[in-house]
Image (cartoon, rainbow, N blue to C red; front, side, top):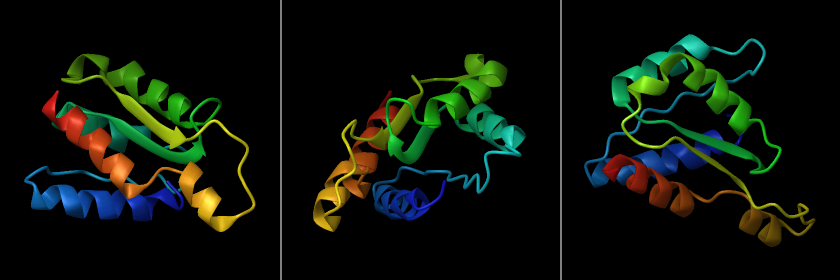
Length: 117
């Protein structure tokens, strides 16, 4: 959700060229949380990757993942994954900030792995 939607779209376009179909759901809000759309997607695809800009530890991605898995755990065909920023203080310098948040290259690697699992 948020600014990571652009990263997700870049990754999805690259993966589409490799024959990997990616379904992106932009939550837009966490309250209310559109769990049903996410649950239907996992039931259809058998996969779940949550992408967040926040740090991996303490980010909302694991809460989102947990809420989805409460309803569709047995639909999974691969382990669910949360992608988040590095667990470091966010630097003031834009180039360093870009280094800490998830990149499209990292998302591509993770989604490729989940798709092959």
